[in-house]
Amino acid sequence: MLAKRIIPCLDVKEGRVVKGKQFVQLRDAGDPVELAMYYNSEGADELVFLDISASSEGRNTMVEVVREVAAKLNIPFTVGGGIQSLDNIKTLLRAGADKISLNSSAIANPDLITAGADFFGCQCIVCAIDAKWNPETGTYQVYTHGGQRATSWDAIEWAKRAVALGAGEILLTSMDQDGEKSGFELNLTQKISEAVDVPVIASGGAGKASDFLDAFQMGKADAALAASIFHYKETSVANVKSFLKQKGVAIR
Image 1 (tube, rainbow, N blue to C red):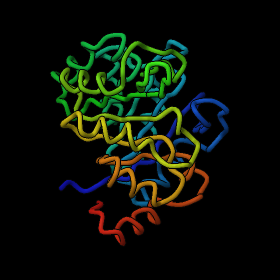
Image 2: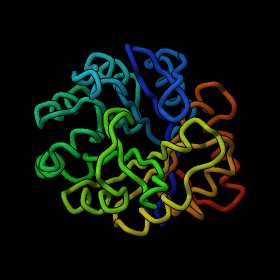
Image 3: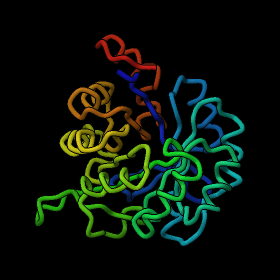
């Protein structure tokens, strides 16, 4: 069994790390470079950097910030937001990213997943899925552009399609649970983990150490991502890892 991973996430807007609830009510959480250095020293297994307004504002990811963050890290670093082309992917990997996260652009142009995977390998391409429960259809609906636009895709079907196209990992965020600190969306996480044969990162809802245990045991996730509880020092990566070790979870 692969060791489970704990991943802090930097949601960046206008050069600052922000965090909200259900993709709105954003508040400042600090400087991305300083936070990256903190998590690097804290024992985080990886770091995710998402330029959350790039797609909705129709611009590319902030390359200079990516370069600054990458220079301070010795852990894997995933970057997403506003990535529209293979050239964008090349630029960010050259700037120091280890993996690229595609969300809105993958829905608009699924061939971009394949192009990136063919050129750099599947392990470099993460498909990020922002999903929200739709009671009318009884499905988890995929959203793009920072949660602003609904698509016709069911999250489970899109995850399977993305992997078939070449995605080497799924970053699954529950919009319903985002920032609520009431636990991950375990039903959706389990369904997608069982539907694909690549690692799944659970995101959205972490409030305490036991939520990570649930994501791994019940959600069957390979990794779990959190932001606000780490940014605002409600707990730490080290504390979460210590708890998981006591529960017998294999972690890095």
